[in-house]
Length: 240
Image 1 (cartoon, rainbow, N blue to C red):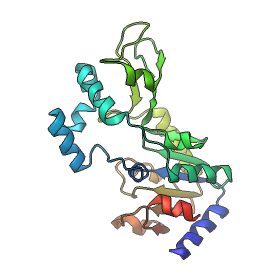
Image 2: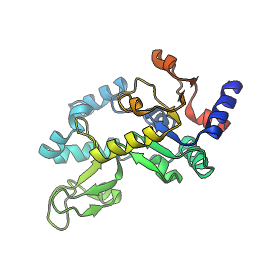
Image 3: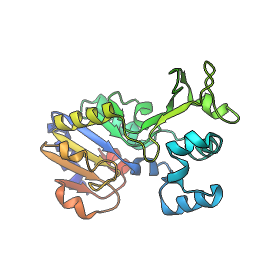
Image 4: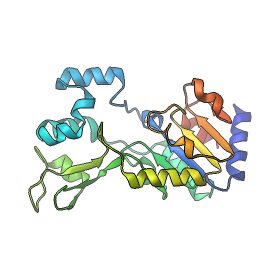
């Protein structure tokens, strides 16, 4: 392990441009269980009568906003604070050893930890807008509304600016992610694998010198990486 940490240090020091892709493992370090995890999906379906893929969708938001927001407040709007991994990434960025963070989590952990160049690929819970007039609302407004949060200007149902299941991702965010990966000399895959449902289509844009995976579970596609460290990202980042 020590030898791999030293290899990682050298790669970061020698890199001209480093990008980190942060997957669900970063959230799981904070005790969060993803909605699609079998045990949580079963619990949600038992309590709400529908699967998380169905209730956390644009169709459900549009047709059953009362039930959607009940679920959204209880299961999604959680108080998750940035832990070791986001804070260490911010330190690396300030030290000039990390240039961009692309994340799939919707809690803006990296940005709240102090990272400046962050791509929240799936949006974040702190951004809420009226789809009709464009007025913005805070996450506290969503939390504190008793039933369906409506725009104070036009009465439309406010839309959390997060990617719901089945949504097309924001084209601008996709393009920005591709551009960042094309610039990268070193690519860090943190808390996920090269076979990630979210990131596997983006890795093809990387043509740099070092592809590094840090994830607690080994995976068959690890063989395509230049360096693999099987551990929680926070342990590896703390070791740096």
